[in-house]
Image (tube, rainbow, N blue to C red):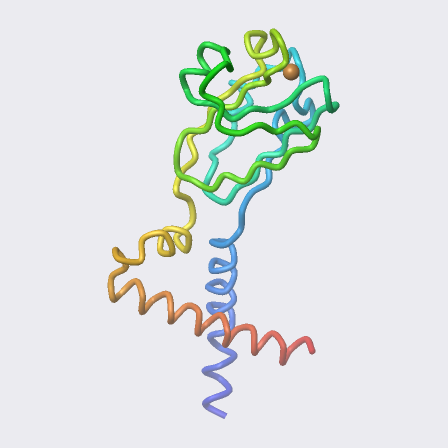
Length: 169
Ligand SMILES: [Cu+2]
């Protein structure tokens, strides 16, 4: 009986921990330009400043194939709009999903003549993001406490999942 009280009394706390654990693993999905999508005559610098981007997030460029494209470029090429050099990646399908895999500044331009100078360009500063990614990326920096906490929260997560299964299945 006492055991039951301990289990169900701590249920809300476990639930909160469970959701914060899940939230840490979530990545955001952004359509570039929002409802305007990837087009001429949109201010993408303003758009890019509306959000905080993290590693694991995805940018989606949506446009009519052939009318635009999306090149990931260096900062220098972003500033000059001269894509004869400094092109890191080319996306041309009309529905391009670009996963932000690194903590760095990303620069994008449209390579159709005149579009970059016309405003189809922006840069974003992608932050390291959620803790689980950080821990995975730097295993050597992982302290004993952090590691113990990670195992502990994983244990709680499994425990909470067990309770949820009991309740709903
Ligand atoms: Cu364009």
